[in-house]
Image 1 (cartoon, rainbow, N blue to C red):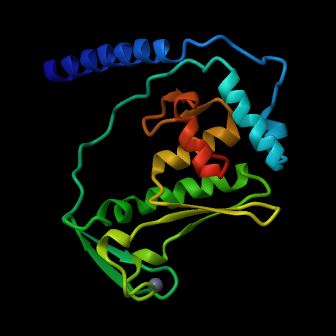
Image 2 (image 1 turned 180 degrees about the horizontal axis):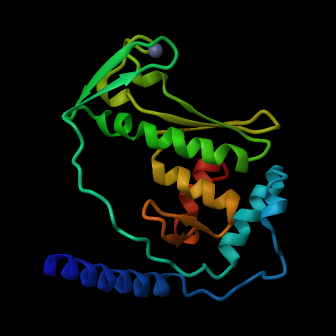
Length: 207
Ligand SMILES: [Zn+2]
């Protein structure tokens, strides 16, 4: 019980340290405040809307962080992961040594986040390309070439692919389309999008 209390206090102290560091980083004056983009407008999904929403992240003061609850069981990953291809049912086994192990074990989480993202990103087709994880779909790949790719397909036909997409990446996108200025963390906390704007631009194909 004492250990739990110590861990709790440490978490709070760490939180304040991060907050104060962030506060220094983002201590910029609020520029163009007239240009307001609401979440409703972002959902219209023209390229201009997306660029305007990105501009808003840059010009707004970031919303405050909220610490999430860190209540979870520390269960380590298994030694092997069996990937089942949704196209052909082929099973591909990844050991912990494999570079693709993390991507394969994250897949369930990635798929769930894609389902959350899909209705928010109106007009944009959002999907995961998992073919490189399947030994039958992609037989001649090196271990380092096996990963999951995020695919965004815009109404104007542009396709933006991001290899080795992470759950965090998808959380940024969900936050971008749902809130505009912040995103929800794994622990259900809230973080501003401003510090990750560069990555967000990459994911949206706007860099
Ligand atoms: Zn396959």
